[in-house]
Length: 546
Image (cartoon, rainbow, N blue to C red):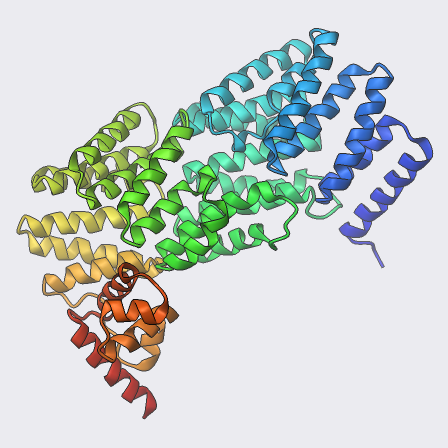
C-alpha cells in the first residue's frame, strides 16, 4: 500500500531524530526542531531550537545562533502568546549580531513577530521597509519576499490597498517561481490571507487558499499545522464578510479546535471572529461566554462591544471601544468598525456630540484611504448622527451614497443594514412607499444570512408601515425555530403573568437582561405587548399538542 502524507512526515521525523541523536550537531537539532514545529509539537521544537542555539553560539557561528534566537522569540510571541519571553530572546539575538556587524540576520530580526499580530501598523511598515533594504543589500530572496509580504499587509491595513496588494502579489510571484523556502512561504501566506481578511477580498483569498497546499511541504499533509490553522481562520472570516456564513463558520470552528489547542496565541482572534458572528445571529449570550476568557485581547474589543450593545449597556461598549482605538495605530481597516460601533454606542447612551466626534474621526480616516467599505461606513456614521439631529434629507443622501459604495464591496450584511437605515430615514420623512421597498430589500438579505437581530428590526419597521414583513409564527415548530432556548423559558414565564423582576429572580439573571429578552421575543413573534405574546404562546402550545 502506498504510504500517505502522514506516513511520509513521520518517516522524516524519525530520520531527523536519529540524526540528532547520532550526530548531535546544531544543524541536526535545528532541522528536527523545524519538523516538530510543523507538527504543532512546539515544546519539543523549542527544546531543539535551544540546543541548536547554544551549540551554534559555542562554535562561534553567531549568525546562525542569532537566527535560532529569532526563531525561538517568534514562537514565544506568535504561537505561545508570551511577549516577555519573546522580547528576551530578541535581545539575545541583537547582542550576538552587534558582535557580528552588518549581516542579513538584522533583517530577520526586524520581522520576528508575525505581521498579523502587530497592532502598531506604522511600526510594522517601518520594520518591513528596513528588512527589505537589508534583503536587497545581501541578495536574500527569502527575506525580500517576507518583507514584501509584511509591508504589503501593513499598507492594506492602512487603507492603501492597491499599493499593498501589489507588494503581496509580488511576494506570491516569487513563491510561485520557487525562489522562496517553504518556511518563509508560509509566513508570506499568513500575511496575504490576513490582508484578505481585513479587506474582505474574497477573490484573492480564494485564489491564494487554492495555491497554498501546492506550495507548502508537499507530501507531508497539512503542515505546518499552525499555518493551516491560520488559513482556515482568515478564509472563514472572509467568507463571513462576503455573506457565506455557513461556510465561514465551518472554517472558523475548525480553526478554533479543541480547548487544549497548542497555539493559544491564535485562540483570541478565532474566538473574536466566532463571537461577532454569534451576535449577528442573535446569540448574544453565547458570544459573551466565548469572549469571557479573552476580554483583555484587542481582537475581542469589537465583538465585546457588540455584546454590550446587545445587552443594552452602551456605556460599557464605549469604554471597550476606546480601549481598542487607543491600542491600534494607523490600522484603518480595523479601526473603522470600532469607530462605527462607537457612533452607535454614543447615540444609544444619548451623547450626540460624542457620536458626532466619532463620525468626524471616521470621515477623516475615510478621506485618506482607497477602500470603498471604509468610505461607506463613514457615510453611514454621519447619517446616523444626522437622523438623531432631525436631518432626514441629509441622512438619506448619505445612506444612498453608502449603498452605492457597498454594492461594489462584497459586504452584504453592511449593505442590508444601510438599506434598513435608509428605509427608517425615508419613513421618518414621510416617504413610506420607498421605505417599504428598501426595508423589504434589507429583510431578504437578513433572512438569507440568518442575521436575526437585524431581521427583527426590519420586520418591525415594515409592520409599522402597514406591510406584513416577516410572517409571524403559526405553529409550535416555528416557535422553537424563532426563539432560543432561553427566550422560550422567558416566554413561558411571561405567559404565566410574571413581571421582568419575577422572571429575573426565577432565572437568576438581571431585570435588565429579562427586559431585553422580552423585547426580543415581542419583535420575533410580531406582537406588540406581553399580553399578545402570552396569548400566542398559549395558542401555539395548544396547537402543538393536538
